[in-house]
Image (tube, rainbow over all chains, first blue to last red; front, side):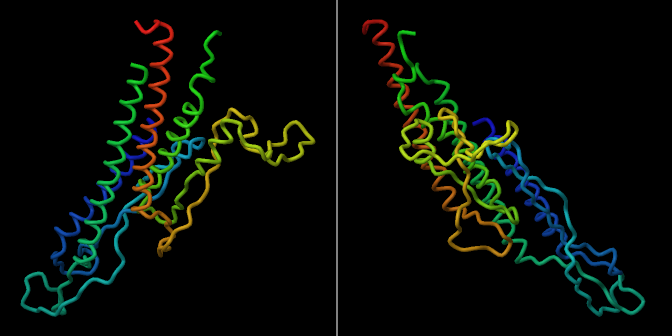
Length: 133
Length: 139
């Protein structure tokens, strides 16, 4: 039972990190830069399952890293822009807002169900402690 | 010992342990709902319970061990061990990232399992109450 809380906590931690990256991506969705290398690229967490207790089959979640999205950045011809390069182009971040919204909803739903699991196991443990009283 | 707890508590003690184990497995499934290539798992509760209580008529298949360091072919050969066999769930709809967790099914299974855990707990509590009444003579 105690392991459930570890598992649920690891899941909540991972989903919270995903929500954080989503927030960063949304905040930087309109970023503009003068070169392709310095422009903001969408960040995506990488989830991996991690064995917490081999005997009981408890498998938690771990964020093994955060990857930059390799999708091509948007390039726009705007010679009057103060940040434009010598050819008159500005570069905009490759954040896909619709994708990020979907990610946000998915992360919050998964967080909710993990929180529910945590709460339920807490109730069960408390009931177990009262056994025989 | 005059009071045999194994007899007094019956099947419920095993059921409770197995329910706790199953809830851990289902919690792991729910936790990994977004992990690529994670395969949802579960146990066959009925089979595990009948194995735990030793009421299984069909004897499990054993591997012949010709040397002392051979592994035991039957994982839960000892009747009292509560190691249930983990099985993979077949998804109704497979997803592109290789994950076979279906959140609604896992949530439903977890809630059901939690309720049945409480049921077993209630039964056990009743048994203990009965034992207490027997000891104190109902006073």
